[in-house]
Length: 465
Ligand SMILES: [Zn+2]
Image (cartoon, rainbow, N blue to C red; front, side, top):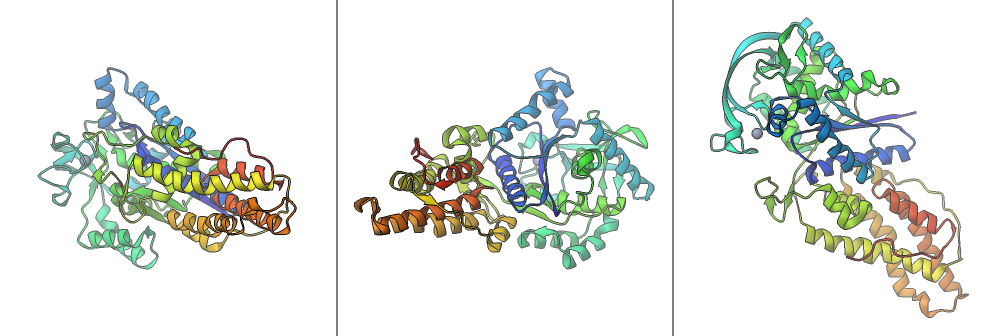
């Protein structure tokens, strides 16, 4: 059986889930579900990143023990994904002792390889990103992703990883056996690599909330090194998941491109572990023309989407607006319009017309294979195109046919009426098969309505908002 292993980033636990986390997770879920539908053996991993200074600070602010704080926040992610019917096979938490053990083993390999040395580090550090900043990272002297007070001067003795040693090998890999998608991101990484690479510290001296270094227990593993290893560690400690490494696809947001396409790969090269086959780095959501930010309070939460549009409505809107290569501008009002136009007035209305007019008609099953181009588009995160094609081909066409033939004006036993309703029912069955990965509940409902014969529909598929 063909294996397919897809990951989301593990989400940093100082935050609560918003539409940014949601789109990566829904995207991974669509891929996982499609590959299961294609009879592949799938491993879909998501989870939370729970170490580092920032988490310790959050816990301190709330006056609770750091592990208790993690135990309190991790379920907000677990439950958000449950409410969206995300089908992850495992939820990894970096405070899991089984993960911590693999982190120690992998770093020991890097140490044994001679790729580690001790040195003093001095520079600007963003506590929000948990990383040292270079000149090119700065905007107005601080990290552009976080408030200015998060950028601090830091000086400490750290263990360094010889990242620069792998620069040429990485350039060669990206040029010849590329794993960075889409193309714009490949170019970006390549240009930065060619501009020169500094070594990077892999430990922290004064951060106690972390995994102790195997060879120097006074230092803890830099949270990024710890977090990246989750993709590999899960395949080592979960018994039925061995054989899944290397991952087929890491899904990422653009703020973590560098860590996942350069540092992670270099760590694996050093530890002599196979590299993931592909990374896909998507862009961001804008909310009503503005950057999403805590200070503006304009983030959309997954719960808000589910409450307004239902599980499948939320999944559909995320998929259609997915910020693949460019930022995607969305807003609740525009989501409402899209929901009403596509789901209530188009797909939902088609099913309700077919069920009302065609009740009792026999619908023979049509054997067909999922179109290769559709699979390719989903694999390349082109959800809008893929779903748009399904709507055009099966849904719009059927609604147009109904409007043309107007079966409601024909007698119940009129051959033309029977023909057009049967045709529309077949098209709905095909649409349901295609949309199974995107809207699993809706797909099931449609197929149930049209299984063998057309059944009367109680209520609507998508109530108008
Ligand atoms: Zn930052």
